[in-house]
Length: 284
Ligand SMILES: [Zn+2]
Image (cartoon, rainbow, N blue to C red; front, side):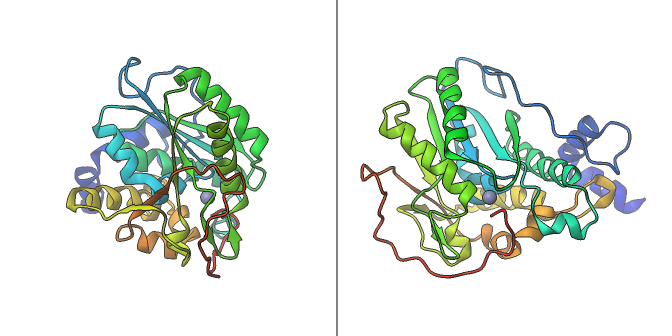
C-alpha cells in the first residue's frame, strides 16, 4: 500500500493517463487508440506551425528524437507523432506470454506514457504489421500529412544514412520511412526535413548533427526512457521497449540525438563506414 501511494505521488501524470486509458481495470493495458483524424489538434492551437515526427515502431521516437520533440514542444509547435508499425514482433512479448495484439497495445501504451512526459498527445498509431512497412505505404502517409500541414510543415523521421548491425540505411522498416521522407523532399513536397539516427546505439556512426544534452534535457530523456523501461504490472507497465533493445535504452540518456540533412545524391551514398553490431530483435 505504501509503495502504491508512493507511485501515486511520484507519477501522478502517468497514473492519470493510465486511468483515462485503461478504465477500471489497471492490470490490463488499454487498447491502442484509433488514429486521430486529419487536422485534429493536439496540445498547441490549430494555428501553430506543425511538426510531424514519423517513426517506424513504438520507442523509435524516444530513442532517436525524444529531446528534439520536447524542444519542439517548448517552441510552441503543434507536434504530431506518427508510429507506422505496432512493433509486435519483439520476442519479449512472447516471453511475457502476450498475444501479438496485446504486445502491440502494451507497446503503444509505453509510447503514450513517454510522450505524455513532454505533453505530446497527438499520436497516431497506424498499426501496420511489424516488418511490413514499405516506402509506398509511407509515401501515402506523408502525402496525407502534407495535405494536412502544408508544404512548410516540419518533417522528422528516420535517417537513410543510418547504418548499424550490418544494415546500411538501418532496419528495413526504418529505411522505408527514411526513403519515403527523402523522396518527398526531393520532389519538393516537403522542405523542412530532419533525419534522426538510432545507429549510434548499435555501434554505428553518429550523424552530422549531434548535440549533447544539457541537464534539463537529460532529465527529459530519462523520463521518456523510463516509460519504456519501468516494469510495474499493476500499472500495466511491462517495459517491453526496454527489454527489446536493452543496450540502446541503457545508452539513451547519455548518448546524444543525431540528425542528418537530406542529400541530393539519389543513392544517399554517405561516405560513412558502418560497423557490425547486434540488434537483438526484429524491430529496431
Ligand atoms: Zn524501430
